[in-house]
Image (tube, rainbow, N blue to C red; front, side):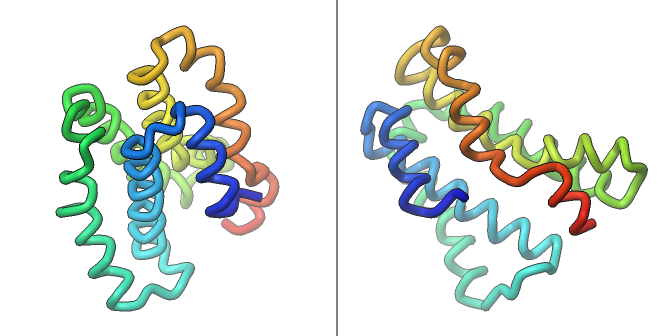
Length: 149
């Protein structure tokens, strides 16, 4: 099970303990969780959660030095990630096949972590470590996901 501690440990390891890259990925993950909870309405969200999410989106992430230095590489990944997420939300209510695709697409944020790995360690490094990162973050089984739908 992914916890904040295990997530930080993995990110530190695969992102060469680059503090700004790690904080960028953690902030993005927390932001995406609030967005998901708002859209799915499956977890309680407080007003402060929403305010903090907006602060993260408008201040924390844009001020992050790693993000600022690499925005040209990261922005297209973020656009794709959000497009995949919206598609997954729409597919969740469709056929079993679409739900299976939604299961994968909803975790496209992992691609941003892999993009950060490429920025810091090169393409070969990112490819050699992609399986490990995907297995870590995709810890929910398809069966458990479909059971919740």
